[in-house]
Length: 153
Image (cartoon, rainbow, N blue to C red; front, top):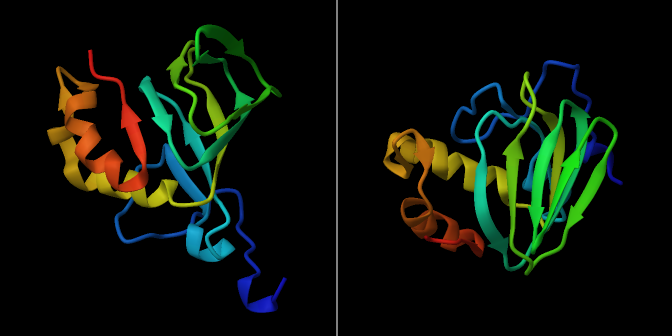
């Protein structure tokens, strides 16, 4: 690894992107930092993530604190502290907050790009919400750019 790509972040430090992220989404490694191989975020999941498919990226999640509900294909899991899950591309899944306080996880996406998708969502603001919840019909136009598709009811 070349020295110019070395990153050292103190516990509260994050990588800054083009759009400021809420504290619940702490970017630790951006796609550009890894030559596109992956992105890594520390996420506090305060809002459920509706069922969706990543068509070209695998997603790995390691639970640091709390409990995370995972709906994977046709199965449901409750992942506690220390649990790891790999969500392979092409398989529908959803993530749910099932603990108070909400679960805090490390989330890796390979190849990278997840942080840019989140930037686009935060830039869109409340336009992607209906009654305070993420609305798949409103998210899908943004998600399509990143080869992600949310199931619409």
